[in-house]
Image (cartoon, rainbow over all chains, first blue to last red; front, top):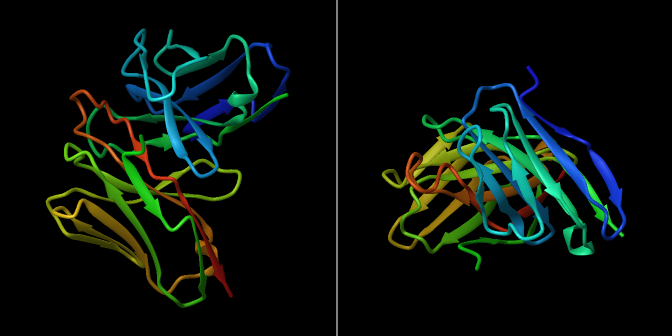
Length: 113
Length: 116
């Protein structure tokens, strides 16, 4: 009963490097989200997806790209990392209807130096 | 623009005391107000949620009070325990299936410490 799994859990990048964060869910959820968590700012939505092959921008999308080629996976890419992208990243998923509860992964702590 | 404002930023309570965290929202289209609990190194997890057609919801020691006219809601933790020490986030979302698609707007978070 894995729920939402994020890979990797920790990463240090140099400015300008690229990387991809992987999110996988086994609950057959339609909706998936990427949030970033920064001290004193709560969680802010980066991008989201309402189904396989669809993506949309959230509140803070600049510098990030996403893809959802399979229903269970949602990838977050940083093409050219900047120190401002140092954060903890959380993936979440939820049902299309029902309770609207969002299920979160354990997070990826990213440091850009 | 922070659409959901949360206070206090941090809170220290003695074991057995009452913890109260407050949130205020601006968008009257919000119709679902959850509270999430986050332990260090973990992702947030749903604690309790309320919809605006009720003024209060209680689950065990946790109660949400909701004031629609004031656009405010709060979390009360009765008989607070050291195990309740965590970060608490209020959030809000609009109707699923419409333009919101379950997106959550979070408050800034409250770090709760319960001393034994």
